[in-house]
Image (cartoon, rainbow over all chains, first blue to last red; front, top):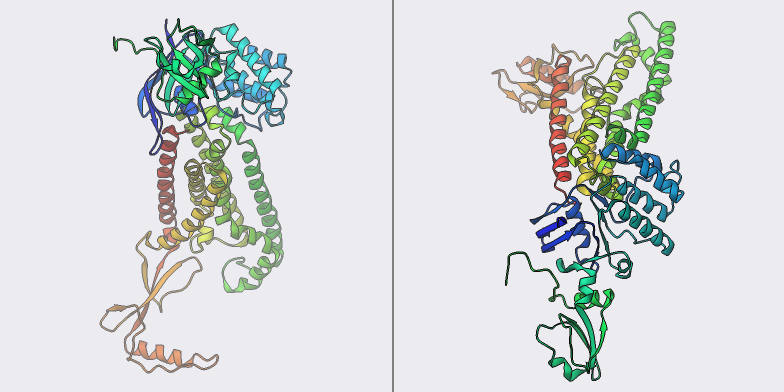
Length: 284
Length: 316
């Protein structure tokens, strides 16, 4: 399968410090990718490199075909009417789809004669999203699309995004520092932590290969071979572990499936652990 | 892109040409009215800088005090406004509002976006500057003022000077906006740079050409020369900046009398000392205009290159 987005040893350095180091990911086409990580992990830097706003210091990043971007805070020209924002899109992009843009805005009840600055935050987000979708991109990159939106607007934005995905089959990459934003919509997870890619993979596969075990502390020393403890916490004589690569365990453990939240938290707390596909042609 | 540039700067365009229109109307009305007044009151050969026109000139400057005041401020205020309101927000505002991330991620390459913006607005600014110069050149002769060289304020309002100054200020603003990424500080930089450049180029203009050296006794002030300095020639033909000492007795004048000073100068003259004057003649007008324009536009070109490289370096 072709990669929609591929980063090879991508590194970006600001003045002295590295914002991203040695990031390699390969994301298949047609996925909805959730990019998560704590504040300052390098999410925005990574996305800016993907859309060409930043030049890589090392390595490379490439996308399959046209990329559209919706930046954090959804910047628009406040003094422009909505129709003028669409005209901007049409003038600056050869593949512009004016008809679908107008239909989308009409469907959302956003008047095209109104100035952008007079719209609500949710409506502005919808205009910004319309601007990105009307370019008919192969890859759509959204930086914190749900930040600063009320719950209703979050829902509406997510729904219209998903409609767009269903219609075109494009690949979407969206970042968030709130994991629950992503659980329902994404099928691929990338965890960035301290400027490095910690996890990249299909969410179903990731959930299937991670288990949460709770049981007496002394059992923790006798896990089966091949098991890797990603995260552990203990209270009194009780231990709770998030382990990778285990199917059968001692029956004294209480076993449950890890949630996306459990998984992300466990990795973020153990920055040295990683769940990445082996680079092709390297290792055994 | 052209549409976007004009749409984004619609307000500035309207205000700029509105202000030029107001100035044009002011020049036209005052010019027509003054022409009428002169036809009724002027002695033959007036208005001019000739002595017989003194009364008329005083009357004219009383009548048009306000217009002269506005005109007097234009050489420094106009470029500052152009730089602050055309230049500084050009990139400063995009960075400030994050809209650079919107336009720089459209299909149009960033280089073309910037080239169209800088190019179109520079053309508009230059055209506005030339229009200003044309208006001033039509207006001043009505008042009998054909002097365009001696006064640096007037010199900066005629010929190609307004276009060069305004372009310079525009690029200073654009570069400051690109480097500081904020509009307001960039505006402050423009005002400071325009003020310093006005002073600096005035000082520097003494060296635009080799000055003319004339004997003080043969020299007459025409009202349109730039005086640089005086010097003395001793009987042997050596030049010295200082007034010769210990050659003639030098008394001190009391009250309003200048008898002692006159006697001193007569004595020096009698002993073969001569006073000379260094100055630039108005025939150097175009040489000065073009030298100043070249200096301003070369600096603007360098700052423009800094701006472009800053934007293309891709540090969002």
